[in-house]
Structures are given as C-alpha cells and as structure tokens.
Length: 557
RNA sequence: GCGCGUGUAGCUCAGCUGGAUAGAGCGUUGGCUUGCGGAGCCAAAGGUCGUAGGUUCGAAUCCUGCCACGCGUACCA
Image (cartoon, rainbow, N blue to C red; front, side):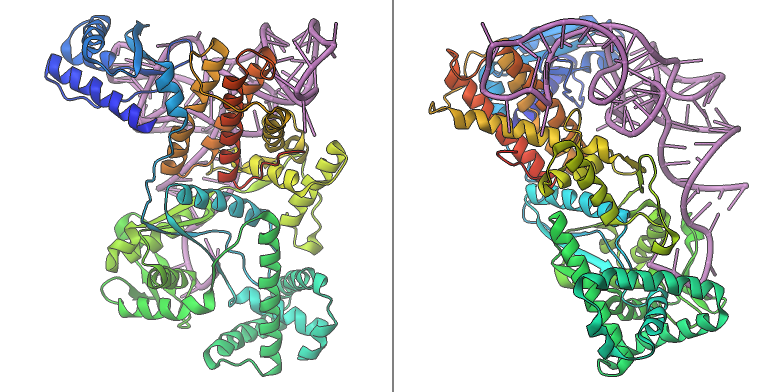
C-alpha cells in the first residue's frame, strides 16, 4: 500500500510540475469513505499561489491525471472547496491488503530500555504501565525489521537499599543471613517491600536510624568495590538482591515480556563517574563542592552529576548506562521510556552527553508517559507504602473479569489491562477502569479478542477454501478498504512510536467487520469463497495487530 | 518566579506536521433475534473543542495573553 500511495503522490506531483512548473509535496490522506479511498488538497494549496479558483485548479489537474494517471485509480472526483478524491480499482485495493508494513529499521540495532524497577522495592502500577508500553514499542521496532534488545535499569545501590537493609536487620534481629532461609519464597517480595516502607519512615523520623541507613548505603557500595559476598551483611544484601530479580522475572513472565539484560546501577556508577571526571573542565565543572553540568547555558537546568561527597548521582549513573549500552550493542537507535517527571532531567543528561559524544545523544530518544490512576479510587494503606502496586491493578482486572465472565482467564485479563493502557496516547496520565477494561462491550481488549475468536470459528466451520477476491460488493469493499489501511497504520505507529494508533485502528476494523457480518451471510452465500477469504484476511490482521500490542488472540474463548 | 506538559459530549478517550457536517466507547432513549459465536447490529439525543485575541481563503489543530490542574526547577530517582 505504501508503495502504491507513494507512487500516486509522486504522479500527482509530476502532473503539477508539468502543468504549472511548480514543485509541491503531495500528501494523500484518508478521507471519509463517501468521498473515496484517498484525497489530496493540492488544488487548495496551489490556488493561493496561482491566484485562481481552487476548483479550476482541481479540474485542470484531474483532466491531466485522467489522461496519464496511474492504472490503480478508477476515478478522480472533485468535491467541496476543491479536494481531489481518488477511488482505487478493486484489484488495487485488494492488493493493498497484502502490503507489509515498511521495514524502516532493517539491519539496525535498537536498544529499548523500559520498566526500570529498583531492587529492594515493590513493583507499582507505573512499572506495569511502562512495561506494557515499552513492550509494544519494542514490538513495533521488531516488526520494522530492527534487531531489538530489551534492557532494564535499576538501582541495586543507593539510599533506598540502605533503608530496606536497615529494616531487614531489625526484622532479622541483627546480621544473621542464615535466618533468611525461614522466609518462604512467595513471601520474600512483600517482606522486603514492607521493610522498605519501614526504613523510609525511620529515615524521616529517627535521626539515629538515619545515620545508620547512610552508613549501610556506604557499606553496600563497599560490597561492590571489594566484591564482598561473604561478610554476613553482604550475604543478606546479595541474597535479597537476587530475590528482587526473581520477583521481577516472575512478574515479567506473567505479563508476557522479558529482558535480555539488567543493568544494575552498581555496574554503571563506575563508568559514569569516570566519564564525568574525564570531562571536567570542558563539559562539567565544579560548583559548591559538587561536579555539575551548567544546563543554563543550553536553556536547561543545572544538575549535579557527582555530589560533594564524590558519589555519582543518578545523572552520572545514566551517563554510565548510555556508555555501557553503547559498548554492548553499538546501537543505531536507543529508546528510553520513563515517566514524564524525568523529561527535563533527561534533557540535561542528553545535552551533557552531546558535548562529548554527540552521536550517542543523537541516537537516543527519551519517551515519557504519565501515571496510572485507578477509576473510582482504591484503598491504599500507608503500611503498604501508600502506592498502587502492579499486582493491585492485575488483581482488580482479574476480579472484574471473573465477575463478568464467570471464570478466570489470564489471557483475557492481560488483554484487558494492556489494551486499556495502550489505547490512550502515550504522554499524559491515564485513567484505568477495571470494569470497563474487561467489559467485553465497546472499545476493549476482550472485545477484539472475542471478535477474532468469532472469525476463526467461522473459518473452522466450513470445508470450503477461501478464493480470490474480485468484483467487490459495497459491504465487502468497505471492509477491504479498511483492511488495506493496516500497513499504513503500523507505519504511523512506528514512526511516531505511538502504539495507540493500532488500537484505534483495530477497533474500527472490528466494528466494520461486525457491521458487515450483520448484513451479509458468509457460509452458504453464493460469494462464500470470496467472503471466506475476506474473513481470513480480517482474522489475520486482527491477530497481527494484537500481537504488536502484546495481546493474545485466542481462537476460542 | 521560571521551564515543561495537560485542558475536546455527563464520564473515559481519538482527532492536533491547518482543510470537506468535530469522531468513538460507556451511560441515556428507541429499534433489530425461527441465521455463520446477539459478548452483536441499526438509530436518536448530547459539544461556543478552558478562555480572550491573532495569523489564514480556511483553526480543535499554528502564534500570543490569561485561567485551571500536574510535573520539574543542584547534590532523590
């Protein structure tokens, strides 16, 4: 389709040049179905510079196109103030359905970093959201031919570790790593999460605890520097760190994503520190005892990269991360997905990197999203940390699904959550309503899954083999027209890194099909082979689109 | 204060590289079932696109002011 569309745009551009001697970028758009398959407003654009009536311009252009235009176009019409609408031949339209999305990233190495949970802490709703979005975006790169590497970054060192460790010691009654064996595997994550909350409160309320936590934080850096795995405290640290990664992996497996590499901060801190120090004077400078990057010179904020104690801040660790990713992958493009509270922060980091490694900064894209809000609110106990956890969201969806559907179905529950997250444009906060997401009516993941299952069911029901699609009837043509848009929609979602376009499209497609289905018999009709082909095309397209979103398309539900 | 972002129907959202009557879903109202999975389809009601200006043949879309909310604004991430 893309190729055909580009050819048509080019042909119109050539005609314009031949008639008026002007170069103009022609862009075909998708008009309302009543007008045609493609439309262009070139006549309106030209009328201004030519000083003539747009409809006259359109007529002149259409006459020319009718003489020498593409064979894929059946007719050109002029409408409204001077739009030119094109209607394709059935053959061209059907051919367009089989077009593959563009392989924009063929042969390119892409690193997608998302999710980024911190060891020793709980996974919250934001991690679920960013994981779902990141996974879908990574899928788009894969679809476009990229060699995609999914990676994850998290703080296995830092104050939050000290806080958790402090409370863990209290729970254990001291540095007794052997007591960890008493914690059952399924209680480890909540046990640690609770410790983090307790440690945080102690840090804020109790000066003595605060000093102890700061000391613990320093001690943890020491475990990495000395490669200490044997001292009692180190044993507790490494074991709990491992527990965290187990907990993350279990969660990712549940939601159907996985990462090929974790970059713990402990591994990026050193290289970050080193890199920043190497560029003191040219890029970074000393200020009030710290090493900073003067963002003011670039219309950004000044930020600290190495604090006055000589420790790397997150800024330096992020510098290290980008350097490390580069060493590991030599990527063509690196995408980092985080919450939008980090947007301006990341601009500073990238601007700093641009000063000494411009190609790295240029090939790095930072995408941000908002936070997940639960419709109707949810009871959040301060004992749990007063946050909406990832499992709370999944459990709410599962409960709603069970209530409506009468049974548990992880595939449907996940489809509901993922679709609800992805159908909204990435960037702003999103409102999640569990009831609505599983409702199976309206714009939901399960609606699409069901639509797919129903189509597959029809294909199962008959022995007749799908045939060629020709001489389309009105209802069929309308559906084919929609199917032909798929590749374009995927391309748009890929170039903008906006998966929601696919959601919007799939829902419109399903509505189109349901309408067709309601008014046209397939099995047993005299156009059965043709329509079966249409049904299969539809089911395949739905399945393909859902797969890009990371949503399963069961054959039966 | 400054910077970034958001503001579209009762609710949740598309549309935002300017174009043809501003689109969906939920909810509301009415219709369709002796049929391939009715978890559907058809239809109606509902919007001064935050607000005031500006640019343009044409603005939800671009520019400016203002209002509301969110985030950021040096040693957190």
